[in-house]
Image (cartoon, rainbow, N blue to C red; front, side):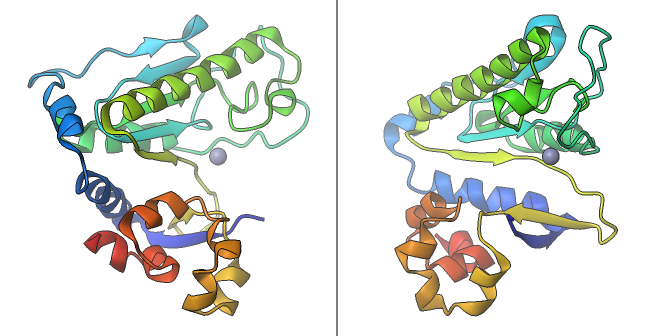
Length: 231
Ligand SMILES: [Zn+2]
């Protein structure tokens, strides 16, 4: 089971900002020029919508892609409720995505993809069969959701060469933590030394491997934030 490193809620924006700074430091001249070619001061570009307004792509021009697969509340009668898998909404994750997107400067605005369908109708963050459970409308929305993510990813690669993808989820436990999933177990973080955690056998498991490699940070200090912030 995936473990999460916990951050206090107030740290989330700081973490995202640190990641952005990390990525901006080595930005090549061409990428900097692409950023400067971003929209002039004023309103952000309009959203692009999937069929029936179930999926929204809010384009950005920075090197970050955000997605919120479980914050939707649309419950169309034409899509029956899913009968297996998790159906609990991740409250306020759509709003968090929009808040984070709007936080950044207009020339480094993250891309954001939102699934507006309730999780009872579609789980855009699951494999296709479990996600849509055979309903053609839900299946189309699933494809559109992932196509928008791919479109955003390509835009980032074209402009910057690399970027950061953050999938936004929510928890209903009472501790009020903000958590950063990184595909490492609690055992990985508590049993192994910093040297062990620098072993590729462990290192390659984490979803932060490219981010840490970019900063030339050691894994543990990278996870702790020290090297990432200074990288
Ligand atoms: Zn979720």
